[in-house]
Amino acid sequence: MGKLIYSAITSLDGFVEDEDGHFDWAAADEEVLAFVNDFERPIGTYLYGRRMYETMVGWETDEFLGDRRPLMLDFAGIWRATDKIVFSKTWEMASSATTRIETTFDTERIRQMKASARSDLSIGGAELAALAFRANLIDESHLLLNPIAVGGGKQALPSKVPIRLDLLDEGRFSNGVVHLHYRVTA
Image (cartoon, rainbow, N blue to C red):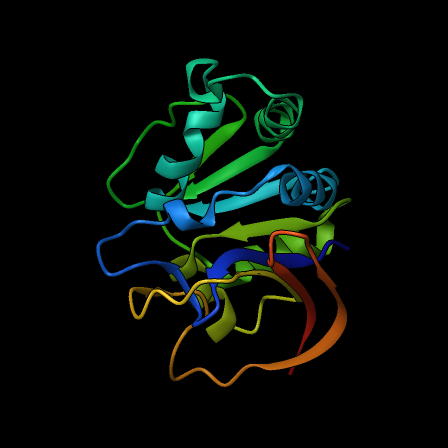
């Protein structure tokens, strides 16, 4: 049985992007990227909403990698090899390998996927994660809090949804980012 894991890089005040939709303040340095690579490596399937997939699909192209740092290449390899399911009512075809489109986020289907999975699943995107939190599908959460307050924007965690979290681990990075790893309890 696999766990469904929500990870997000957030501002200290809990936003994944600011009011203008920017998240350049969340760029990971080498230390944080190495950590992210290590916890993403065992994931077997990524679940994305359309907008998060559009953000991530750049990892499919060599041009996106810029200076081709080893950790960037490592993450690109992880992303490219991992199965991806994109939930979209408007798309019919994915633009990357190992990707399929689902038109609806069927909570029972996600439960079945978790039950039959040989590895963990990751859910990306705050809006899709909110649906999963509301349906009590998420088992764990990794939050990487950046030392910045952006004052508003898209929340990392859904509002009006009570979520109980048990802290499993925490860590600090030299750039001020803090990692919080939680188990989601009923």
